[in-house]
Length: 322
Image (cartoon, rainbow, N blue to C red):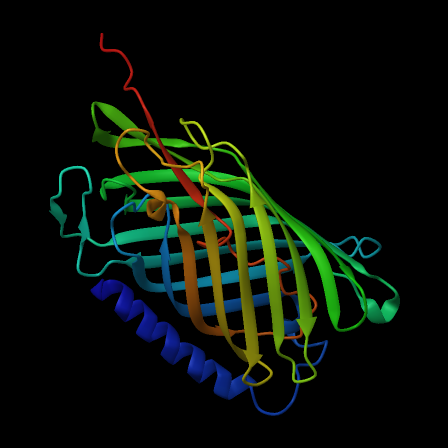
């Protein structure tokens, strides 16, 4: 944890120093080297919970991240490549193994990596459709139901939106699970099984005259739970809001809630009620854009997070012995 706090402090100081150089009252010109690509650095507080937590409190901590957008040399198609990552440390006072009841002194860490392709619409030029496709990977340490699993998961994520006018967009965001992972002992001789939850969201986004942006969404997750009958959650809804502080800085806040499925009762016969199926995420923080907030080369999709990367938890029998 001390290492993360040092990194966060150094990052905050460096960002503030950099902002004094760039955030003077003038936008960067198109000839400035920073405007030739899009980039952002963020620092924030994040708290979340899901099926991998069951009776544990929410996981709360700090995260840092960055996102880079690079235009491809095909001007006729106006395409960009984006690459980003984030690192967070949670549960600074340790965690609980819900299988054994033993305390775990180590913190939980989580890394997201996102890479893909995107196109931004230019409404002033008659373009109304924006789209992006990315591949997300999640690496968790001291993670999951038993609190000490190392988990590697992945998913595909895509978004398409249509500009109704210069202020409002409507769109779809879809997630398809990819790589799953098997963790440690879950009780009863079974092993924990982890996989991303596929879901489809519809969203509305509004851009205010002040430069602030707001988005609300409603989503439907896949109808089958992992390794058991029924489903885990039946509805997702959330919102995010960003407020510009100047041409290079903005503050953000977001939340998402996944409603437990009435058919859930995960781990049939283990007595876990629907409260263990609740998915929630709240995040607040600040973002610094070295090339300016309004740079059209900034990545379209954010780095994966605990709202866009939902994880289901099932149980599988261990492989037979020799």
